[in-house]
Image 1 (cartoon, rainbow, N blue to C red):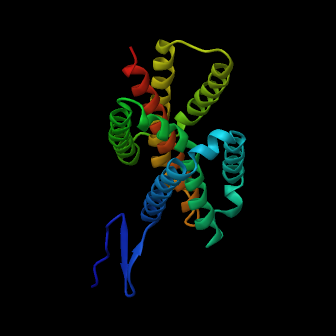
Image 2: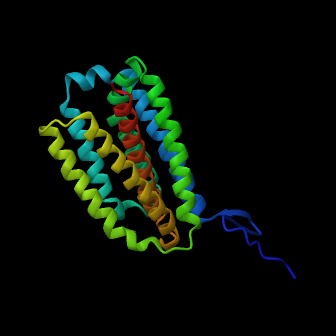
Image 3: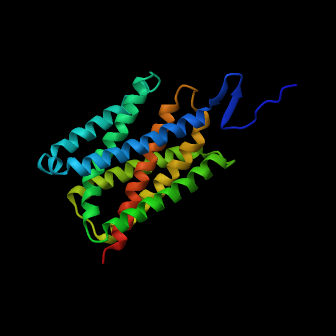
Length: 228
């Protein structure tokens, strides 16, 4: 009798190895990270002056991102459109943080801060992803709390645009953000099992947004903690 392959990440058939849903999600997450790196490089290398002289372009890019996020359920299953729009979204996201990365890289100690943030993000993302994927606890109850906390963070962030806060408050705010998106990583990794087979882009987009925001808040926390 032919033995069945029990590997949860790949399955075999007469035509060879077939990628599982989890494998697709991870592959597109890797694609998004590479596209974002490309966006940061293009933005920091060639478009910094353009962004500084035309600051309204940031709002245009943010608008495009929001449109892609809120319409993702409409295009996420349409191949090859879903792959193009997903990669384009990640590239645009990289462009939006290019000025921040470019300025930070040129400040004394900025590269060290950036490297620390990248390492810390990789470690925390891996740890929380493993917890979310392997835990036997049902994390679905976290959903309401996470989204309410996210709304609160958005409101406080908007207030911060008009009311400057102290470095201590920045440490607290960014620390809460790190914990929040660490929670989102755990929740969304466990939720991977609940997606329909053709919704791998939706799952990858959710996890990519978790990773991106986790990096931003870790970067803010390390930057704030390095100030006198």
